[in-house]
Image (cartoon, rainbow, N blue to C red; front, side, top):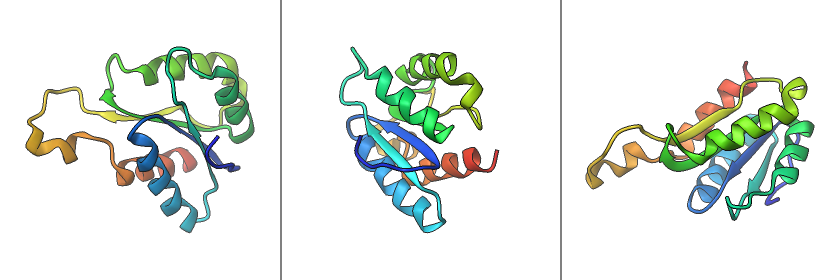
Length: 127
């Protein structure tokens, strides 16, 4: 757990951790309290910590650099949904890379950035 919060759980690993931290700072200016979890490893991944956080906040956003289709966020979302379904206040959001090859010159458009995560936070909170 990187940061405790009350309204929404943000989950990331690797380079995306900094991205969700920046998004959380912006969200907190709007009065949204974000709990941030650094997954650190995806095999095995800390299911118990994530589930405990989602049971508290009722919301989850997973951010990773891989494409949406076939990305590990889908496994996380499926597991959390099966364990927290009755406690979810909104659908689980995945903020990911695009489902398309990309030239390196367009990396900033491809990778999820703080503004994309912030948009997902607002969508989730407004659901």
